[in-house]
Image (tube, rainbow, N blue to C red; front, side):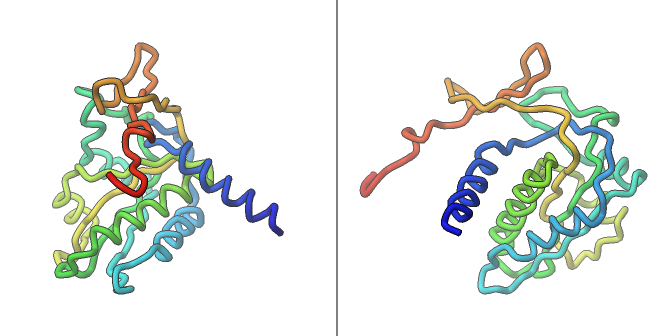
Amino acid sequence: MKNNKKKLKNDVYNLIISRRSIRRYKQKKVKTDLLKKLVNSARLAPSAANLQPLEYIIINDKEKLKEIFKTISWAGYLKDWNPSIEESPTAYILILSKQTKNDWYIRDSSLAAENIILTAENEGLGSCIILKFEKEKIRKYLKIPKERIIDSIIALGYKSEKPIVEDIDDSVKYWRDKNGIVHVPKRKLEDILHINKF
């Protein structure tokens, strides 16, 4: 039993350090049951005061996927680049809040999104949390009531790329090399960690 706990801890940590945002996907359908599993992992995320203001919309219908794809702005640092329709996500999960006066819903949304993307990674899916998209077009297209806040979209699908993490040199901007591989600069642990004092 002790070895199983240690293995689980290592598996979770390795999952976290290996996960990257994916913006190119194979055109393989993500099954609805798997998407429900992702939403269930979000449902069980911590919630401030246990208010549980979040709701979710799963999108995996081909026509709806195309319409959602058109509303998204991809990868701000990669100027003039968007994934092509042939490498677009094959599923989305929209995160909504039903409580517009709850100051903590953004924290709840972030925790739920993290659960979704880690569960997706564990299931062999790539993911990308998206905050820049045409909310009102999506609201109208999916008939989302105006009383709901559209917080974010999580793009999902089977990975068609493998970004590389590297130490920050002089910029936080991720970039593509001549082979189309994304390089993601991250701050070193020793640059961000303080123990017992600043």
